[in-house]
Amino acid sequence: MSHPEPPEPPADAPRPLLTPRRSHRRRTAGIAAALLVLAGGGWGGYQLLASDDGPDPQVTAAQDHLKLFLRGWQQGDARKAASYTDSPQEAESLLKSVTTNLKPSSTRTTVGDGERKDDRNVRVRFTVRMRIPGVGGYGWDSEAGMRKRSDGWTVKFTTPTVHPKLRPGQTLALTTTGSRAKILDKDGGELEAASLVGSVDSASGKGTSGLQARYDKRLSGGKGPRKAVAVTDRTTGKAVKALSAVRRAKGRPVRTTIDPRVQRAAAEALSGVKKNAALVAVDPRNGRILAAANRPGGMNRALQGRYPPGSTFKVVTAAALLDTGLSPSDPAPCPKFARVNGQRFENQDQFTLPKGTVFKESFAESCNTFFVGARSRLGDSALRKTAQTFGIGGEWDVGAATYDGAVPDNTSDNDKAAATIGQGRVQASPLVMASLAATVKNGSFQQPVLVPDSVRKKHRAPRKPAGNVVRDLRGMMRAVVTSGSGHALKGLPGTPHAKTGTAEFGDDNPPNTHAWMIGYQGGDNLAWAVLLEDGGSGGSDAGPVAARFLKKLG
Image (cartoon, rainbow, N blue to C red; front, top):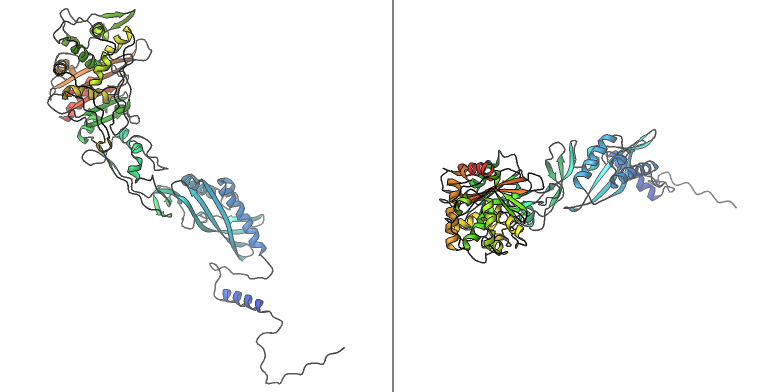
């Protein structure tokens, strides 16, 4: 069957703009592509090659290769990720830096759209999402240039590939966004006594020791440290620009009772000491801790150390003996040895005192054999109960961690003999022994305090030392300086009163000894204790340190 030809249109009839066989969809795509090319449009100058034939295989291949790079990053394998780039060393170094600094608990990556510039170059968008301790969720969008080589595709790695805000020489790291408050001395200045203040972990921003740990919430603002992801200079570690925004926390300061002048004198007095050492000073009127110095830093042995106090404990033993009616002028023989059930006790260097020596003199010269011999005057609980009048063995609420001493009931004659001279199971910290001297000065125990506004309930001694006991102890401690083992303080202003101590420890033969000296100033509101671990003799080794301390105070 044939169809007649359509008639020719008149010569002056208008012609259609597009031929009937071209679809509207193709017209639209063609116009869009033409407009992008003419305008220099696209993504950063790249051409968008529109097609109705499905995904561009070049873009798909580039996306697949980028997925390998991102998978290695996501798994924390910087070397593997870097192997898919054209700069493996640079890429591995930066990815390791970012991972080490941020320490993400998880990392997720997603590949996005890609666009082709030509047959060998494609750019692909991607997204990184992390969970970061101290920050929470943080993510960003970036893009990677992909290049086709003879052996396949590679990531054209640059610093901004990791994060678009990064520039060469920079990395991502965490910076503290809150304002951590300071630990202050009594005058409001920043406290620099390292062992007392403690430390803050640089990664987490949390206090890890000392007052920094005890008051972490208060110092950091109540909800722990706050961190932000920041562009950071790789050389200096200085944050250049914070990227994640959080509410800034503001901490509250912690004010202590430390007197900067006294603390400085204590630190300087220990500066030449080669042994582990501590020096504590307190105000006898109220127990306020004026100084707590340690050498070296680290352990706060001044407040928390546990040591046999040696002959400094004879202040307690003397108080117990005075309570039994013994007088400072009563006879107090001091032979070379004292034996208890086969155990031999002796004086330092086996010294003796002449016939006619009295209690005050045996105390001043620190005669062990007299105190061991006088144990029969004391019951098994006498030393514990007397120590309690000086606050020893109670639970102290100081505002910081402390060791508050231990004086158990005696369980045998030998145990009692050792306890009379501060050995055996008797233990104390330098703070406890400074407080012991302060109690003699003040006449009653005043619990030491470091952070007053944090103290809830001070420990109270069950009773005061008797008035005559305090009076006699003061005279005996003054004699230690004027005519006894505390000769290092003789002639110093302030009327120093003291007691020396040489405390045996360990199993060596001859035994090693800690060196102690405790005391107070008769003309000032100051009591103190010096300890040198494995430091030799109280009089000849601890004494000069105490003398330097008092001289520096003037």
